[in-house]
Image 1 (cartoon, rainbow, N blue to C red):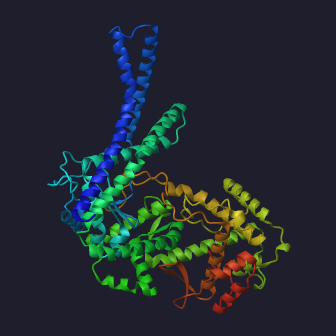
Image 2 (image 1 turned 120 degrees about the vertical axis):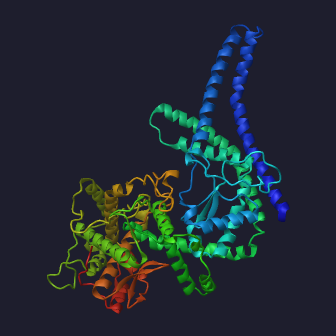
Length: 631
């Protein structure tokens, strides 16, 4: 199907499926009214003398009570479905005065597509774009809607009524910074074209019903303590899930029809450019994911949030273009006008989206403070990389102190008892038969450290080094050893397993101490251009989208040893911390990145063989017997 015919066919298919969803709602209403209709028949029969006798009287009472109960239950379910607040994507609203060019471009695109323009524009820290209905009363009064001659916007027939307002256009912020203006317009064309089907009353009503059922299921799933509330929520959840299952197939086909109609309509606008722009969508997604997991996450764990994430994704993709010859053609695009020029103050928007990303993916507070402050990219090596390595190194030596490992390692100058890399190497290299620690002992140390966390004392309690100012791993990414850690540490030495258990326990203790800091409430009056729309979504379950699963004991031990090696390199060989846009924190010698350190560290962790690591240290002139500076 092509052209106008394809649009009509997709729209009619969507409308027929929407009517099927509404028929499910009508059947549910009919079932709820059926006992009441039977009760009315029995009551009328009794009043006219046709249905008399003790049996009929008893049946009348039973059916009337049942009808009253069913009506009350149905009214309660209907009230919850209608009044429950549907889920809304966390976004940063873009006010029209802060992006007049962007609004002008979207409205021009809607005029070319002959569909209603979106009621507002919002940004989200994701590589996607969509339309979102925010006309529910709990989302506030709808913005004024422009009048259009074609109420159906190409659905094939006149509409007698319309929804209160057009949906909100949600745009992934990486698109604005990485794409050019023409590419953004081409990518948004199919999305904006969806406002036409969204304006149809049947499709809008079906979507409201589905969202209401989904919200009712969320209400029923909320924890309740008193028995009466639990029984009511159980009934509400059962009825809502039953209706959702009945509507599921029709709703999916309805959305497919809407998407097909929007895609057919958008073919008339920048179709050739859209094919090229779709390549940029995949590239932006890869760069954004890499930036969050490799660059932003270490900063969030240190209580700092990068305030220019969107600028960072441009730098990361530009670096990818420099390294990968397949991406060389993308660098020539950078001379064209970027889509972020459509914003009056792109830096302010970038900062707001960056803070929202930290909240969604890590669970950070809604406001800045001494324990949660922004960091610029030029400050990242010193404020994040250096602090992360030295904090991990300090934690490693505190755990070694708790294990009773002597400070003066072999080969150190007499009288030197500072923290050295040699101490770590000698401890992990000593044959396992000479120690008393076993894998089971490591588990015991883990439990003892948790007990010390409850009392705030013990040999592992820190005395001379501060904890990370903010939750080191986020409330959604526990740092204790995972259930499979025993299998994960099975291939390591006994001393390595005990050290990994101690580090996991220490991290768990620091997380427990730092968690109240991250539990601050959201700002009561977030500005439209300076913060996320906190009033539209529930932030009690942050992070909503954790980036990584909990780290295993082996990963924690490897990270701490790597940090200790980097500290020794900086303090004894003149190395410097640096930021690699694709790999995150990195170590530089004379302005060049060092060779990969991971294989050498893994050899020490897994087999207790320090040979590869000592060879790596010797090649770079790093002296492991020299003390290092910790935080």
